[in-house]
Image (tube, rainbow, N blue to C red; front, side):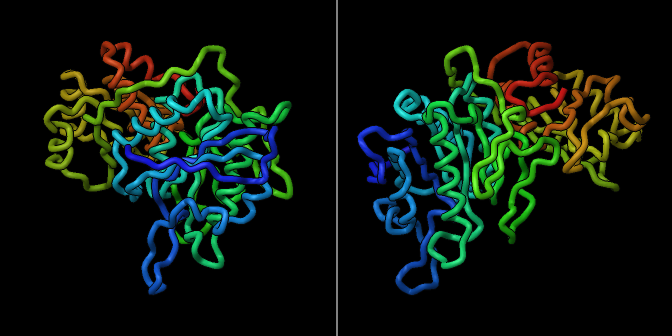
Length: 356
């Protein structure tokens, strides 16, 4: 990634409470209207105090790292995730917390991927964005940005509650990143964490729920450098054809599959469907079963329609989101482990993405 760094002169005195690195990747939050008033364009972050004058009241040393070519979040790739992890690694010892400004469409995927890549994370990495650009009069961008910076700064404030994990702040709530999914495209409450409670809520004060936040790690940060994208998602639906299932399972080089099933992990029991899954597993494909429901969890074997999956070796994904499951597959497959070791790790809890 090519980027520009800029020190922002806030109200921080000689002894600020904390230092925060703000990483702008792209997205609605950093957009303003051009001279015509019709088209949205990224604003220059040397104007950030003009756009968000409230920052001048924050007792934080703030550095902005802005990508020279902002990325629409629909174009986010695993290379961008690896680059973001590397940027955090490079700057880890110089800042108390990190805020990543990111488009909302794939923010949950990025938060999930970063949670796996940043092992033993002891500082806040907060992703945020906006539904309405900062250039409009009524927007959610300004409040999301200020609150995310305040949360990230808690990493350096002595005696304060801080969040040593990758999280998403949006519309007054802080959520564990790998527990989220985008559920709204037109309202401010864009993200939901159906199977895990908020880490914090922003009212008059920031109210943290310490019991829901991951503990501080005992080991130093370890940044992983490899993901394997030879994975796929197959969402079941009534009437799905043998041709479609066969084409996905027989994709050249495919190593892992997230199977989106019904309810508590249920799937068709037709002979051709079970036969195709069994053959794929016998050929070394890892299949991870997650529910299409926003809440609840996979319980393979509870019903007969999931018992067959359990018996043939499909891995139950418990209450993982699809976003957490597909990025976890990429991460685990990138570790060059044996098939059995990979399956064991997928069944376990790495970064709070699953309730065991």
